[in-house]
Length: 70
View 1 (cartoon, rainbow, N blue to C red):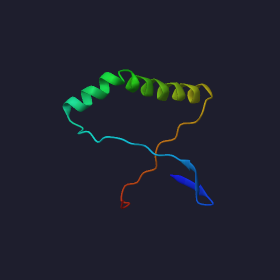
View 2: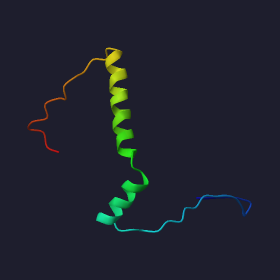
View 3: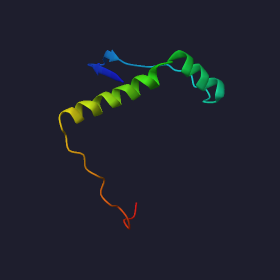
View 4: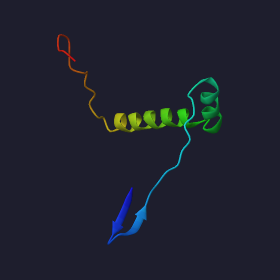
């Protein structure tokens, strides 16, 4: 993203990345770099669910979508 004013660049936001294959070693590398990220996400979801439950927020079943095309 670039923002220019009167032909002069005022702001430039670029990101340089390298593409890597998502294979077994690649997944292992991600897990080694971010070992607790999955647990943190699961804990955050459950924390929000607990807060809603403590507020006595009503829980509704999803509507029956049988027979409706996707």
